Length: 318
Image 1: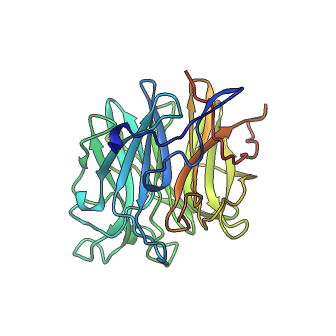
Image 2: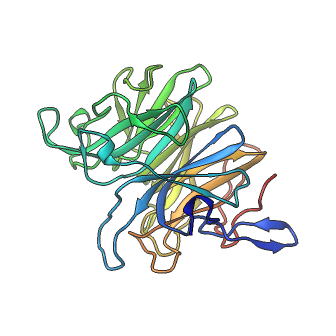
């Protein structure tokens, strides 16, 4: 079957209209969703799980891109980036996020660094760039943006993972990331250089997978948490991206058949959507995950209502 035209989100007619079904991507195992909206289309950047059914660790060879104009039918644009894109990199394709700025698309990724004269190894963050949301992408700077030696607060070698980036209203860009602690730094307008020192902090129950954005006058830091085992999603808010951050609680409980989960949040055609992954597909599990999406609702004070995980997914939008 031609994957470009494959409808991954199977539809069912209901009284409320045409609906997608979770998981929304069914032709491959996907994880770590990162959605953006560009010119009336949602582009979804994902990891790709290829571990065997009996595997006890991740195997993630590349990153994929999907797109949709209605939140129901998803087009698979294929594997558009992998650690092999980066001459300095080795290992798996961990969580990543792509954003647009000044007509270019910057894809911030986490993988591992080769042991060489620059780094002794460990997790690192790179950035790829393209003129289009679906590539082709290339290494933007020919080196890692962040290496393990640049952060000393955590002693394990995989703390520099899961970058999330946003550009504030004043044009200042910020990157947050980290496993075990959350780290943040300003980025220069080039989006390929750090603009100041790295700061590390520990939001309540924080593990990894931050997603940072601004809505009205509030900044949101949403992350995979250790409130229970497996992971849940919790969040904080602030009136300044530098903090202080106020803990707000749990917004997503444990997901089916996966130890991890990962947030991705976007507004599209007047509605808010919460992307995440679980292990609900046949033969799925913690190392064979699948991306889902459900509605996200805010209270009048800006706090987030708990996410209701559904099998039916969301209505198609026009």
